[in-house]
Length: 236
Picture: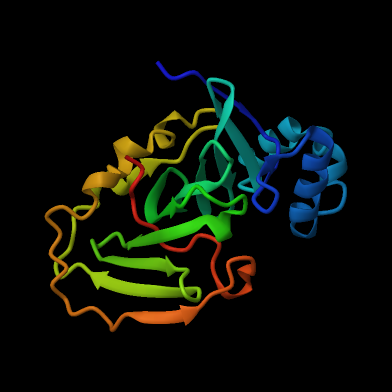
């Protein structure tokens, strides 16, 4: 049985750290204060846990850091429209991202899966990035897969390939119940949900793909790139 525990401290994806309680509260306040009436933060922002409980009950933004065997395992962002899960490696680099769109008060749909492969040579995530895969699903079974490979020699470029399923895929496992507060277990085991090594098995992607693109890419500058570039699974 997995040993999970939770808190609501803020994960900083730039510094790749889980912040302490005081800094977490400052970051959460900055994120939500323009979206709530005056006085709400004063009443419910005394601790990260206080805010998370209030936010969950009122469909507001709050973070959850999940620890497995006392090590950071993933970071969950519960927002008004999406629940996003960022799985973290031993360096606290994000290597799998899963976005669930809230469809009603009870159900959500896994609409995005991004998987990232690293070189394990550099100390900055973008500088260490090797390949990304981005899978976008729709409830009617549409699937688009974008793969981007980072070519670093002789100059840094991105090679991009786009595939689309020619026929609707089975998305029955993409549907989940929206987690109750403090109960996130159903979205923590990504291998049971997305089966990374088997994602495209049996999927007909015979639809002609757009011509591969190569773009100059600055790995230390995130302004040109989504920090969750589409990845490929190669963690074995």
